[in-house]
Length: 347
Image 1 (cartoon, rainbow, N blue to C red):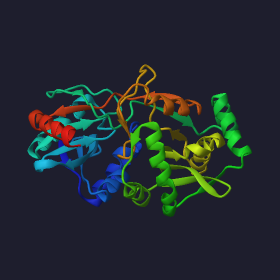
Image 2 (cartoon, rainbow, N blue to C red):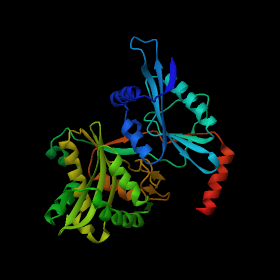
Image 3 (spheres, rainbow, N blue to C red):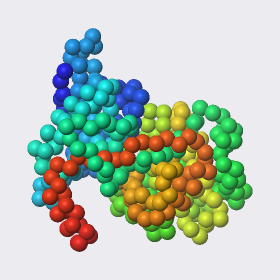
């Protein structure tokens, strides 16, 4: 068996095929994600553990796409978003040990990982992360059903609010990069209202410019933008990423119609699922620190901060899917603690 870094186009094409066919493969471990992260200035490594003795030589047993962030003093943090992927616990354990060895040589303070399934710890110590980047629960809408069936499984209030928006004459249009000029002020207002922070406008420009499958929809009333939604489609799954609206027009219920039209758009493109990307776990009654996985919206910690958006998404129905919480392997605890203190003091 061997563990190696993938670099050639042929290897990367085979890797993408592995991710797309894996039962827990996702956008976050895909080549699409790699190219987007690199466009954002991040370093990306892809590790694969293969079985060279199998009938199909080089068949992957485990893999991990790793995003590397450089920080003060030449140190780094490594992250495996929604990964690693594996076919056996032993394969995952040896792959992670290899990654940890490389991360240690790279002056990594901590390795963060948010696996799709519970991961058995090896020789390292897995501890709960205090900066979850990926939600531990989400709602998935089944798009294989007819439009009538999708609407029927929604909460009555969800269907009602979609119809309210239609009666008020809210129009949903396909947007473009230029619509970020209207979307970004909405996002800033929504952030102030709902208690999260946002990235610079350039982040959303990169998202729409470099992430294959991304799209923006705008809701308009009397030809004026009043709400917007940014999403992405990958391998048959539509994903809601960013949403924003002006509070003054809240009675028009535009965000509900936006979600419905996003579902219809994804369904028409061949998607079989629509991921609402993040709700408060049903067994938790207080807010949790949560970022949406591409680094845009950061929700602050505090009681009830995640409740409103979770209630909004609940109205669209779907099945609740849960994931293990983000974990980390701390490799340089003293350096990590010092930098955390510095950031707390200086901001």
